[in-house]
Image: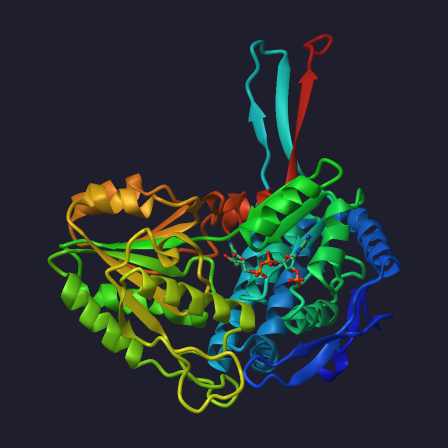
Length: 485
Ligand code: TAP
Protein backbone atom coordinates (compact mmCIF):
# COMPACT_ATOMS: atom_id res chain seq x y z
CA UNK A 1 0.00 0.00 0.00
CA UNK A 2 2.90 2.36 0.73
CA UNK A 3 4.23 2.32 -2.83
CA UNK A 4 1.40 4.28 -4.36
CA UNK A 5 1.43 6.83 -1.49
CA UNK A 6 5.18 7.42 -1.69
CA UNK A 7 6.04 11.05 -2.43
CA UNK A 8 2.40 11.98 -3.03
CA UNK A 9 0.25 14.96 -2.07
CA UNK A 10 -3.53 15.06 -2.32
CA UNK A 11 -4.55 18.12 -4.29
CA UNK A 12 -7.84 18.68 -6.07
CA UNK A 13 -8.91 15.06 -5.77
CA UNK A 14 -5.65 13.59 -7.15
CA UNK A 15 -2.82 11.83 -5.35
CA UNK A 16 -0.20 13.69 -7.36
CA UNK A 17 3.59 13.33 -7.24
CA UNK A 18 5.24 16.01 -5.08
CA UNK A 19 7.76 18.31 -6.76
CA UNK A 20 10.32 17.74 -3.97
CA UNK A 21 9.93 14.20 -2.59
CA UNK A 22 13.04 14.40 -0.43
CA UNK A 23 11.98 13.67 3.18
CA UNK A 24 12.68 10.07 4.24
CA UNK A 25 10.21 8.26 6.50
CA UNK A 26 11.60 5.43 8.66
CA UNK A 27 10.20 2.46 10.59
CA UNK A 28 10.91 3.25 14.26
CA UNK A 29 11.21 -0.46 15.09
CA UNK A 30 14.08 -1.08 12.65
CA UNK A 31 15.37 2.31 11.58
CA UNK A 32 14.87 1.27 7.95
CA UNK A 33 13.53 3.76 5.43
CA UNK A 34 10.01 2.86 4.31
CA UNK A 35 9.43 5.71 1.87
CA UNK A 36 9.72 9.41 1.19
CA UNK A 37 7.32 12.32 1.35
CA UNK A 38 7.22 15.63 -0.42
CA UNK A 39 8.37 18.89 1.09
CA UNK A 40 5.37 20.79 -0.27
CA UNK A 41 6.42 23.90 -2.20
CA UNK A 42 4.61 27.21 -1.87
CA UNK A 43 3.01 26.57 -5.29
CA UNK A 44 1.71 23.21 -4.09
CA UNK A 45 0.35 24.77 -0.89
CA UNK A 46 -1.36 27.48 -2.97
CA UNK A 47 -2.82 24.82 -5.27
CA UNK A 48 -4.22 22.85 -2.29
CA UNK A 49 -5.76 25.99 -0.79
CA UNK A 50 -7.22 27.12 -4.11
CA UNK A 51 -8.77 23.70 -4.62
CA UNK A 52 -10.28 23.73 -1.09
CA UNK A 53 -11.64 27.24 -1.73
CA UNK A 54 -13.24 26.26 -5.06
CA UNK A 55 -14.82 23.20 -3.48
CA UNK A 56 -16.17 25.04 -0.45
CA UNK A 57 -19.39 26.63 -1.76
CA UNK A 58 -20.67 23.54 -3.62
CA UNK A 59 -19.85 21.28 -0.64
CA UNK A 60 -21.50 23.66 1.83
CA UNK A 61 -24.55 23.91 -0.44
CA UNK A 62 -25.15 20.14 -0.46
CA UNK A 63 -28.07 18.90 1.60
CA UNK A 64 -26.78 17.68 4.99
CA UNK A 65 -28.09 14.22 4.11
CA UNK A 66 -25.87 14.14 1.03
CA UNK A 67 -22.80 15.09 3.08
CA UNK A 68 -23.81 12.40 5.56
CA UNK A 69 -23.92 9.80 2.80
CA UNK A 70 -20.38 10.71 1.74
CA UNK A 71 -19.16 10.34 5.33
CA UNK A 72 -20.92 6.99 5.79
CA UNK A 73 -19.29 5.73 2.57
CA UNK A 74 -15.92 6.95 3.83
CA UNK A 75 -16.42 5.04 7.09
CA UNK A 76 -17.32 1.92 5.13
CA UNK A 77 -14.30 1.98 2.78
CA UNK A 78 -11.96 2.64 5.71
CA UNK A 79 -13.37 -0.24 7.78
CA UNK A 80 -13.18 -2.57 4.77
CA UNK A 81 -9.45 -1.92 4.42
CA UNK A 82 -8.60 -1.66 8.13
CA UNK A 83 -5.93 -4.40 8.07
CA UNK A 84 -3.85 -2.80 5.33
CA UNK A 85 -4.24 0.69 6.81
CA UNK A 86 -3.17 -0.62 10.22
CA UNK A 87 0.02 -2.05 8.76
CA UNK A 88 0.83 1.31 7.19
CA UNK A 89 0.41 2.93 10.60
CA UNK A 90 2.57 0.36 12.39
CA UNK A 91 5.37 0.74 9.87
CA UNK A 92 5.64 4.48 10.41
CA UNK A 93 4.51 4.88 14.04
CA UNK A 94 5.55 1.67 15.79
CA UNK A 95 2.35 0.68 17.65
CA UNK A 96 1.40 -3.02 17.36
CA UNK A 97 -0.82 -3.89 14.40
CA UNK A 98 -3.82 -4.89 16.54
CA UNK A 99 -3.74 -1.54 18.33
CA UNK A 100 -3.33 0.27 14.99
CA UNK A 101 -6.31 -1.66 13.61
CA UNK A 102 -8.36 -0.56 16.62
CA UNK A 103 -7.49 3.04 15.83
CA UNK A 104 -8.53 2.64 12.18
CA UNK A 105 -11.87 1.18 13.29
CA UNK A 106 -12.37 4.15 15.61
CA UNK A 107 -11.70 6.42 12.65
CA UNK A 108 -14.45 4.59 10.74
CA UNK A 109 -16.76 5.07 13.75
CA UNK A 110 -15.93 8.79 13.73
CA UNK A 111 -17.00 9.00 10.07
CA UNK A 112 -20.38 7.44 10.95
CA UNK A 113 -20.83 9.56 14.08
CA UNK A 114 -20.28 12.83 12.20
CA UNK A 115 -22.36 11.61 9.27
CA UNK A 116 -25.26 11.44 11.70
CA UNK A 117 -24.41 14.77 13.35
CA UNK A 118 -24.36 16.44 9.92
CA UNK A 119 -28.11 15.94 9.66
CA UNK A 120 -28.77 17.44 13.10
CA UNK A 121 -27.55 21.01 12.67
CA UNK A 122 -30.40 22.94 14.20
CA UNK A 123 -31.01 26.65 14.56
CA UNK A 124 -32.82 28.61 17.25
CA UNK A 125 -35.58 31.18 17.48
CA UNK A 126 -35.04 33.64 20.29
CA UNK A 127 -37.81 35.86 21.76
CA UNK A 128 -37.27 39.63 21.45
CA UNK A 129 -38.38 42.43 23.77
CA UNK A 130 -41.35 43.17 21.51
CA UNK A 131 -43.53 40.71 19.62
CA UNK A 132 -43.02 42.27 16.17
CA UNK A 133 -39.44 40.96 15.96
CA UNK A 134 -38.05 37.46 15.48
CA UNK A 135 -34.43 36.55 16.12
CA UNK A 136 -33.37 33.45 14.24
CA UNK A 137 -29.92 31.99 14.76
CA UNK A 138 -28.61 29.72 12.02
CA UNK A 139 -25.30 27.88 11.76
CA UNK A 140 -23.06 28.14 8.74
CA UNK A 141 -19.77 26.41 7.90
CA UNK A 142 -16.68 28.51 8.57
CA UNK A 143 -14.97 27.88 5.23
CA UNK A 144 -11.54 26.39 4.52
CA UNK A 145 -9.89 24.63 7.45
CA UNK A 146 -6.20 23.83 7.94
CA UNK A 147 -5.70 20.71 10.09
CA UNK A 148 -2.25 20.22 11.60
CA UNK A 149 -1.77 16.89 13.37
CA UNK A 150 0.83 15.01 15.47
CA UNK A 151 2.24 11.51 15.12
CA UNK A 152 0.90 9.64 18.14
CA UNK A 153 -2.61 8.87 16.78
CA UNK A 154 -2.08 9.46 13.07
CA UNK A 155 -5.56 8.28 12.03
CA UNK A 156 -7.88 9.47 14.80
CA UNK A 157 -6.40 12.93 15.14
CA UNK A 158 -6.83 13.51 11.41
CA UNK A 159 -10.29 11.93 11.54
CA UNK A 160 -11.78 14.11 14.29
CA UNK A 161 -10.92 17.22 12.26
CA UNK A 162 -11.75 15.79 8.84
CA UNK A 163 -15.15 14.43 9.86
CA UNK A 164 -16.20 17.39 12.03
CA UNK A 165 -15.22 19.84 9.29
CA UNK A 166 -16.85 17.93 6.42
CA UNK A 167 -20.06 17.34 8.38
CA UNK A 168 -20.30 21.09 9.05
CA UNK A 169 -19.85 21.87 5.33
CA UNK A 170 -16.21 23.01 5.44
CA UNK A 171 -13.38 21.90 3.17
CA UNK A 172 -9.95 21.00 4.52
CA UNK A 173 -6.21 21.04 3.91
CA UNK A 174 -4.40 18.55 6.18
CA UNK A 175 -0.74 18.78 7.21
CA UNK A 176 0.10 15.50 8.99
CA UNK A 177 3.20 14.99 11.15
CA UNK A 178 6.35 14.50 9.12
CA UNK A 179 7.13 11.13 10.71
CA UNK A 180 3.64 9.60 10.21
CA UNK A 181 2.38 10.99 6.88
CA UNK A 182 1.35 7.76 5.17
CA UNK A 183 -1.64 7.07 7.41
CA UNK A 184 -3.04 10.49 6.46
CA UNK A 185 -2.34 9.85 2.76
CA UNK A 186 -4.04 6.44 3.08
CA UNK A 187 -7.09 8.25 4.51
CA UNK A 188 -6.87 10.68 1.59
CA UNK A 189 -7.00 7.78 -0.83
CA UNK A 190 -10.10 6.47 0.95
CA UNK A 191 -11.72 9.89 0.47
CA UNK A 192 -11.18 9.48 -3.28
CA UNK A 193 -12.57 5.93 -3.18
CA UNK A 194 -15.60 7.14 -1.23
CA UNK A 195 -16.33 9.67 -3.98
CA UNK A 196 -15.88 12.75 -1.84
CA UNK A 197 -15.88 15.60 -4.40
CA UNK A 198 -12.50 16.81 -5.56
CA UNK A 199 -10.98 19.64 -3.57
CA UNK A 200 -12.99 18.93 -0.41
CA UNK A 201 -10.03 17.09 1.17
CA UNK A 202 -6.41 18.02 0.42
CA UNK A 203 -3.18 16.83 2.04
CA UNK A 204 0.18 18.60 1.96
CA UNK A 205 3.27 17.12 3.63
CA UNK A 206 6.53 18.52 4.93
CA UNK A 207 8.08 20.14 8.00
CA UNK A 208 5.68 21.84 10.39
CA UNK A 209 7.93 24.85 10.74
CA UNK A 210 7.64 25.51 6.99
CA UNK A 211 4.52 23.87 5.55
CA UNK A 212 2.42 24.08 8.76
CA UNK A 213 3.60 27.62 9.37
CA UNK A 214 2.64 28.63 5.81
CA UNK A 215 -0.93 27.44 6.49
CA UNK A 216 -1.05 29.26 9.83
CA UNK A 217 0.01 32.52 8.19
CA UNK A 218 -2.15 32.18 5.08
CA UNK A 219 -5.06 34.59 4.77
CA UNK A 220 -6.95 32.00 2.69
CA UNK A 221 -7.48 29.80 5.75
CA UNK A 222 -10.56 30.45 7.88
CA UNK A 223 -9.76 28.11 10.75
CA UNK A 224 -6.77 26.28 12.19
CA UNK A 225 -7.49 22.95 13.88
CA UNK A 226 -4.25 22.02 15.60
CA UNK A 227 -3.27 19.08 17.80
CA UNK A 228 0.25 18.99 19.17
CA UNK A 229 2.49 20.31 21.89
CA UNK A 230 1.60 23.33 24.02
CA UNK A 231 4.81 25.01 22.84
CA UNK A 232 3.91 24.81 19.14
CA UNK A 233 0.25 25.61 19.92
CA UNK A 234 1.25 28.85 21.63
CA UNK A 235 3.60 29.67 18.76
CA UNK A 236 0.75 29.14 16.28
CA UNK A 237 -1.58 31.36 18.30
CA UNK A 238 1.05 34.10 18.33
CA UNK A 239 2.10 33.82 14.72
CA UNK A 240 -1.23 33.92 12.87
CA UNK A 241 -1.10 37.03 10.70
CA UNK A 242 -4.85 37.40 10.24
CA UNK A 243 -7.76 36.79 12.60
CA UNK A 244 -8.94 33.21 12.25
CA UNK A 245 -10.75 30.68 14.39
CA UNK A 246 -8.52 28.21 16.20
CA UNK A 247 -8.92 24.96 18.03
CA UNK A 248 -5.79 24.03 19.94
CA UNK A 249 -5.66 20.53 21.43
CA UNK A 250 -2.38 20.51 23.32
CA UNK A 251 -0.24 18.66 25.83
CA UNK A 252 -1.16 17.13 29.17
CA UNK A 253 0.29 15.98 32.46
CA UNK A 254 -2.49 13.79 33.71
CA UNK A 255 -2.93 12.64 37.32
CA UNK A 256 -4.72 9.59 38.70
CA UNK A 257 -6.02 9.51 42.27
CA UNK A 258 -6.60 6.16 43.98
CA UNK A 259 -8.55 6.59 47.21
CA UNK A 260 -8.79 4.26 50.19
CA UNK A 261 -12.20 3.03 48.95
CA UNK A 262 -10.87 2.05 45.49
CA UNK A 263 -11.02 -1.41 43.94
CA UNK A 264 -7.26 -1.98 44.00
CA UNK A 265 -7.14 -4.50 41.13
CA UNK A 266 -9.21 -2.25 38.86
CA UNK A 267 -7.05 0.76 39.71
CA UNK A 268 -3.85 -1.16 38.92
CA UNK A 269 -5.27 -2.44 35.65
CA UNK A 270 -6.40 1.08 34.68
CA UNK A 271 -3.09 2.63 35.66
CA UNK A 272 -1.12 0.11 33.59
CA UNK A 273 -3.34 0.58 30.55
CA UNK A 274 -3.35 4.36 30.53
CA UNK A 275 0.33 4.76 31.48
CA UNK A 276 1.76 2.34 28.94
CA UNK A 277 -0.65 1.99 26.00
CA UNK A 278 0.93 3.38 22.82
CA UNK A 279 4.13 3.57 24.93
CA UNK A 280 2.59 6.41 26.93
CA UNK A 281 2.59 8.57 23.79
CA UNK A 282 -0.89 9.86 24.35
CA UNK A 283 -1.96 13.30 25.52
CA UNK A 284 -4.21 11.73 28.17
CA UNK A 285 -1.57 9.25 29.42
CA UNK A 286 -1.44 8.86 33.18
CA UNK A 287 1.84 10.59 34.08
CA UNK A 288 1.54 10.50 37.87
CA UNK A 289 -0.49 8.54 40.39
CA UNK A 290 -1.42 9.55 43.93
CA UNK A 291 -2.43 6.60 46.11
CA UNK A 292 -4.02 6.64 49.58
CA UNK A 293 -1.25 5.73 52.01
CA UNK A 294 -3.14 2.67 53.31
CA UNK A 295 -3.07 1.11 49.80
CA UNK A 296 0.27 2.51 48.67
CA UNK A 297 2.66 -0.45 48.99
CA UNK A 298 0.09 -2.99 47.74
CA UNK A 299 -0.62 -0.77 44.75
CA UNK A 300 3.10 -0.43 43.95
CA UNK A 301 3.72 -4.17 44.16
CA UNK A 302 0.80 -4.93 41.85
CA UNK A 303 1.58 -2.17 39.33
CA UNK A 304 5.25 -3.18 39.18
CA UNK A 305 4.30 -6.82 38.53
CA UNK A 306 1.74 -5.81 35.88
CA UNK A 307 4.31 -3.62 34.11
CA UNK A 308 6.86 -6.43 34.19
CA UNK A 309 4.29 -8.77 32.62
CA UNK A 310 3.70 -6.61 29.54
CA UNK A 311 5.25 -7.67 26.24
CA UNK A 312 7.35 -5.27 24.19
CA UNK A 313 7.96 -6.28 20.56
CA UNK A 314 8.16 -5.18 16.94
CA UNK A 315 4.47 -4.45 16.39
CA UNK A 316 4.52 -5.62 12.77
CA UNK A 317 5.95 -9.03 13.66
CA UNK A 318 3.91 -9.39 16.86
CA UNK A 319 0.52 -7.74 16.28
CA UNK A 320 -0.68 -8.65 19.78
CA UNK A 321 2.26 -7.10 21.67
CA UNK A 322 1.31 -4.75 24.50
CA UNK A 323 3.90 -2.17 23.46
CA UNK A 324 5.68 -1.65 20.15
CA UNK A 325 8.47 0.73 19.30
CA UNK A 326 8.25 4.36 20.36
CA UNK A 327 7.73 6.65 17.38
CA UNK A 328 11.13 8.38 17.40
CA UNK A 329 14.27 9.10 19.41
CA UNK A 330 12.78 12.28 20.90
CA UNK A 331 10.18 10.78 23.28
CA UNK A 332 12.56 7.91 24.11
CA UNK A 333 15.30 10.34 25.17
CA UNK A 334 12.83 12.39 27.21
CA UNK A 335 11.68 9.21 28.98
CA UNK A 336 15.27 8.38 29.91
CA UNK A 337 15.87 11.96 31.10
CA UNK A 338 12.77 11.95 33.31
CA UNK A 339 13.77 8.58 34.77
CA UNK A 340 17.32 9.74 35.53
CA UNK A 341 15.99 12.95 37.09
CA UNK A 342 13.51 11.03 39.28
CA UNK A 343 16.17 8.58 40.49
CA UNK A 344 18.58 11.44 41.21
CA UNK A 345 15.91 13.06 43.36
CA UNK A 346 15.35 9.88 45.39
CA UNK A 347 12.63 7.93 43.53
CA UNK A 348 12.52 4.12 43.77
CA UNK A 349 12.63 2.11 40.53
CA UNK A 350 10.02 -0.69 40.67
CA UNK A 351 9.83 -1.92 37.08
CA UNK A 352 11.49 -1.35 33.72
CA UNK A 353 14.00 1.45 33.37
CA UNK A 354 15.77 -0.04 30.35
CA UNK A 355 15.30 -1.27 26.78
CA UNK A 356 14.03 -4.85 26.42
CA UNK A 357 16.61 -7.56 25.75
CA UNK A 358 17.51 -8.25 22.12
CA UNK A 359 16.51 -4.93 20.56
CA UNK A 360 19.70 -3.34 19.29
CA UNK A 361 17.85 -1.27 16.72
CA UNK A 362 14.68 0.78 17.11
CA UNK A 363 13.22 2.94 19.87
CA UNK A 364 12.14 0.39 22.48
CA UNK A 365 11.77 0.84 26.24
CA UNK A 366 10.27 -1.36 28.96
CA UNK A 367 7.22 -0.01 30.84
CA UNK A 368 8.66 1.75 33.86
CA UNK A 369 7.27 2.47 37.33
CA UNK A 370 8.96 4.80 39.82
CA UNK A 371 7.72 5.24 43.40
CA UNK A 372 8.08 7.86 46.16
CA UNK A 373 7.95 10.68 43.61
CA UNK A 374 7.70 14.36 44.53
CA UNK A 375 6.93 17.52 42.60
CA UNK A 376 10.67 18.28 42.58
CA UNK A 377 10.85 15.68 39.82
CA UNK A 378 10.19 16.37 36.11
CA UNK A 379 8.12 13.20 35.85
CA UNK A 380 5.47 14.72 38.18
CA UNK A 381 5.35 18.16 36.55
CA UNK A 382 6.18 17.79 32.83
CA UNK A 383 4.62 15.73 30.07
CA UNK A 384 6.93 12.75 29.44
CA UNK A 385 5.15 11.13 26.46
CA UNK A 386 6.82 7.81 27.21
CA UNK A 387 6.16 4.46 28.98
CA UNK A 388 6.92 5.68 32.49
CA UNK A 389 4.75 6.65 35.45
CA UNK A 390 5.56 8.24 38.81
CA UNK A 391 3.68 7.24 41.99
CA UNK A 392 3.35 9.03 45.35
CA UNK A 393 1.29 8.47 48.53
CA UNK A 394 -1.25 10.93 50.01
CA UNK A 395 -2.97 11.25 53.39
CA UNK A 396 -6.01 13.46 52.71
CA UNK A 397 -8.21 14.02 49.65
CA UNK A 398 -7.43 17.74 49.72
CA UNK A 399 -3.72 16.95 49.56
CA UNK A 400 -4.32 14.68 46.55
CA UNK A 401 -6.42 17.36 44.83
CA UNK A 402 -3.80 20.07 45.44
CA UNK A 403 -1.10 17.85 43.97
CA UNK A 404 -3.24 16.77 41.03
CA UNK A 405 -4.06 20.40 40.16
CA UNK A 406 -0.45 21.55 40.65
CA UNK A 407 0.25 21.82 36.92
CA UNK A 408 -0.14 24.25 34.05
CA UNK A 409 -2.02 21.54 32.12
CA UNK A 410 -5.71 20.65 32.32
CA UNK A 411 -6.55 17.89 29.84
CA UNK A 412 -7.59 14.71 31.66
CA UNK A 413 -7.57 13.26 35.16
CA UNK A 414 -8.56 9.90 36.62
CA UNK A 415 -10.15 8.76 39.85
CA UNK A 416 -10.46 5.26 41.25
CA UNK A 417 -12.85 5.20 44.24
CA UNK A 418 -15.98 3.34 45.32
CA UNK A 419 -17.29 5.84 47.85
CA UNK A 420 -19.88 8.12 46.15
CA UNK A 421 -19.00 11.12 48.29
CA UNK A 422 -15.31 10.79 47.42
CA UNK A 423 -16.16 10.50 43.73
CA UNK A 424 -18.34 13.61 43.77
CA UNK A 425 -15.84 15.66 45.79
CA UNK A 426 -12.92 14.74 43.54
CA UNK A 427 -14.64 15.01 40.18
CA UNK A 428 -15.79 18.55 40.97
CA UNK A 429 -12.45 19.70 42.38
CA UNK A 430 -10.21 18.45 39.58
CA UNK A 431 -9.40 21.32 37.22
CA UNK A 432 -9.48 19.30 34.01
CA UNK A 433 -11.56 19.15 30.85
CA UNK A 434 -12.08 15.41 31.35
CA UNK A 435 -12.41 13.35 34.53
CA UNK A 436 -12.66 9.57 34.14
CA UNK A 437 -13.96 7.74 37.22
CA UNK A 438 -13.26 4.03 37.65
CA UNK A 439 -12.18 3.81 34.02
CA UNK A 440 -9.33 5.21 31.93
CA UNK A 441 -11.04 6.04 28.65
CA UNK A 442 -11.40 9.77 29.17
CA UNK A 443 -12.40 10.49 25.57
CA UNK A 444 -15.29 8.94 23.66
CA UNK A 445 -16.56 10.18 20.31
CA UNK A 446 -20.05 11.00 21.68
CA UNK A 447 -18.98 13.61 24.27
CA UNK A 448 -16.92 16.83 24.04
CA UNK A 449 -13.21 16.40 24.58
CA UNK A 450 -10.92 19.34 25.26
CA UNK A 451 -8.36 20.78 27.61
CA UNK A 452 -8.12 23.85 29.76
CA UNK A 453 -5.17 26.00 30.88
CA UNK A 454 -2.11 25.18 28.69
CA UNK A 455 -3.85 22.05 27.35
CA UNK A 456 -5.73 24.10 24.82
CA UNK A 457 -8.89 25.79 23.65
CA UNK A 458 -11.92 24.34 21.93
CA UNK A 459 -13.37 20.85 21.67
CA UNK A 460 -13.26 17.80 19.47
CA UNK A 461 -15.69 14.84 19.66
CA UNK A 462 -19.42 15.13 20.18
CA UNK A 463 -21.72 17.74 18.70
CA UNK A 464 -19.32 20.39 20.03
CA UNK A 465 -16.61 18.95 17.78
CA UNK A 466 -18.71 19.84 14.73
CA UNK A 467 -19.92 23.22 16.01
CA UNK A 468 -16.24 24.27 16.19
CA UNK A 469 -16.42 24.36 12.37
CA UNK A 470 -19.50 26.57 12.23
CA UNK A 471 -20.28 30.26 12.56
CA UNK A 472 -23.51 31.44 14.13
CA UNK A 473 -25.56 33.94 12.15
CA UNK A 474 -28.23 36.01 13.87
CA UNK A 475 -31.05 37.08 11.55
CA UNK A 476 -33.31 39.64 13.23
CA UNK A 477 -36.50 40.37 11.33
CA UNK A 478 -39.22 42.91 12.00
CA UNK A 479 -42.76 41.84 11.00
CA UNK A 480 -45.95 43.78 10.65
CA UNK A 481 -49.50 42.57 10.97
CA UNK A 482 -50.54 41.78 7.35
CA UNK A 483 -52.86 44.27 5.77
CA UNK A 484 -56.52 43.27 6.18
CA UNK A 485 -55.74 40.69 8.86
P1 TAP B 1 4.27 19.10 17.79
O1 TAP B 1 5.75 19.05 17.71
O2 TAP B 1 3.65 20.29 18.41
O3 TAP B 1 3.77 18.92 16.28
C1 TAP B 1 2.41 18.80 15.94
C2 TAP B 1 2.22 19.19 14.49
O4 TAP B 1 2.55 20.57 14.33
C3 TAP B 1 3.13 18.42 13.53
O5 TAP B 1 2.44 18.21 12.32
C4 TAP B 1 4.26 19.41 13.32
O6 TAP B 1 4.97 19.23 12.15
C5 TAP B 1 3.48 20.72 13.29
N1 TAP B 1 4.27 21.93 13.51
C6 TAP B 1 5.46 22.06 14.12
N2 TAP B 1 5.85 23.36 14.10
C7 TAP B 1 4.87 24.06 13.48
C8 TAP B 1 4.69 25.43 13.17
N3 TAP B 1 5.59 26.36 13.47
N4 TAP B 1 3.56 25.79 12.52
C9 TAP B 1 2.62 24.88 12.20
N5 TAP B 1 2.75 23.55 12.46
C10 TAP B 1 3.85 23.15 13.11
O7 TAP B 1 3.68 17.85 18.56
P2 TAP B 1 4.08 16.32 18.40
O8 TAP B 1 5.40 16.10 19.03
O9 TAP B 1 3.88 15.90 16.99
O10 TAP B 1 2.92 15.62 19.26
C11 TAP B 1 3.01 15.42 20.60
C12 TAP B 1 2.23 16.49 21.37
O11 TAP B 1 0.88 16.51 20.93
C13 TAP B 1 2.16 16.19 22.86
O12 TAP B 1 2.40 17.36 23.58
C14 TAP B 1 0.73 15.70 23.05
O13 TAP B 1 0.23 15.87 24.36
C15 TAP B 1 0.01 16.52 22.05
N6 TAP B 1 -1.26 15.88 21.74
C16 TAP B 1 -2.43 16.44 22.20
C17 TAP B 1 -3.65 15.82 21.95
C18 TAP B 1 -4.91 16.46 22.45
S1 TAP B 1 -6.32 15.94 21.85
N7 TAP B 1 -4.91 17.41 23.34
C19 TAP B 1 -3.69 14.62 21.23
C20 TAP B 1 -2.49 14.08 20.80
C21 TAP B 1 -1.29 14.72 21.04
P3 TAP B 1 6.17 18.15 12.00
O14 TAP B 1 5.65 17.21 11.00
O15 TAP B 1 7.34 18.88 11.50
O16 TAP B 1 6.39 17.52 13.32
